Image 1: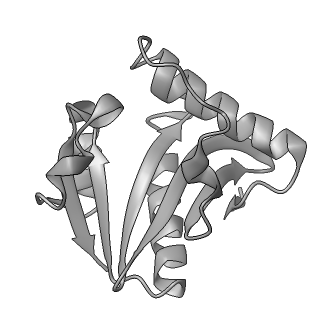
Image 2: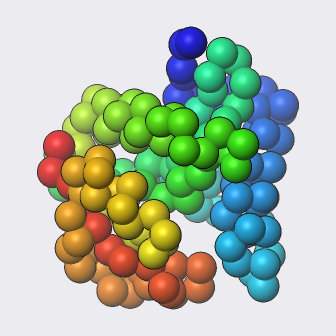
Length: 149
């Protein structure tokens, strides 16, 4: 089935984008932190919020932030609970890397939740301390990783 990874184009896409993020990242993991559907970081011009669809149905989200000097950060990655464990995350990661390359990035960083470290290692990331100041709020327990593209 065809996959797409793109900036949300409609009000329905944005609703799905925020619903997935809120459900999978905040309610399921960080219930003590309120999700902000209007967070300023989603509107910064060098940040790219992306909705992942399979056969036209939203099943995942990621934000790709361009950090400069060929570097980028992959943030707020989630696949809906019903679609986890089926290989979709790997497809989304590959597509995200393609977008990163097209934007001139050669290195990607991530703040990986402890339960996601195995997934990231399988997709080629390695543990790498890239910016300890990032490890606050919902990222406070994360492990920093990187991948050279």
